[in-house]
Length: 331
Image (cartoon, rainbow, N blue to C red; front, side, top):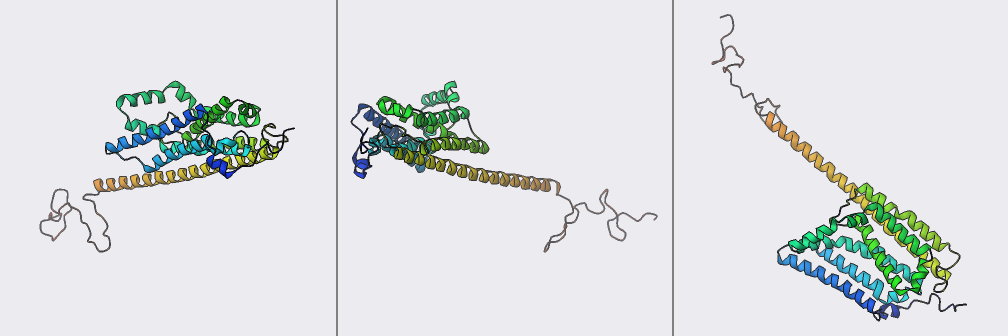
């Protein structure tokens, strides 16, 4: 029997704030990479500014926020609980699969790299974007299936317990979740150039595929009769973590569905408004071209517009008794 106080220990605020996980070489390498990408992003923004071009401050804040989210998820005191408290592990994966990817997608790093780089670097980036492997990996069907399998295999099979026994596998799982989350959210809200551009109905269907996956995982964990890892977590912790994963992931999905639906509605309104303006412009153009010299009904406060054809000219009707008109017939 494993002592109860060893399984799923209580979470301490002091540990969350001070328990940074920087004692492993791989953790330090990851931190350097995370901070390095943030520095490169800021350098790109400053390079654009030096050329007199503006870059949205919101996008910069999104990228820095995404970097901070990843650091909190894998290097802060939160990560010190990821192999002992399943609820904290659930929080970690929510940050890596939803929060950070959404912020990365909104920051448009590829667009910034294309605008801030030289010609050769731009060509290299475009070659990578148009490579067959990249296009295949970012295909919507591949992303949906890959994401669903990732979640189900990790949380419903023994793979989770296996990752806790092997630190390298555990670290790889973190990176894997981040990449899968980025691929998913890039298709929904991404600003960067991509081979695949989803219409609004396609985005709604794409998002809806995550609902049954969340239900399967949520039910599997919240109704489980044994812990997801009896050597590390209590059954109550498993239930709590499963409920957290289920509820929060569904909230992200439903919120995204509502936002995309609203964007679709506004897009249709803009299309209809443009069509109305084009129609009105076409009518005005036709009236301008064909209305010269035509008889128009007088509007209130305006004099009537008479024909521009003068009496007495060839083809003009004659009027008896009016000088300059043709003589009456029969005289």
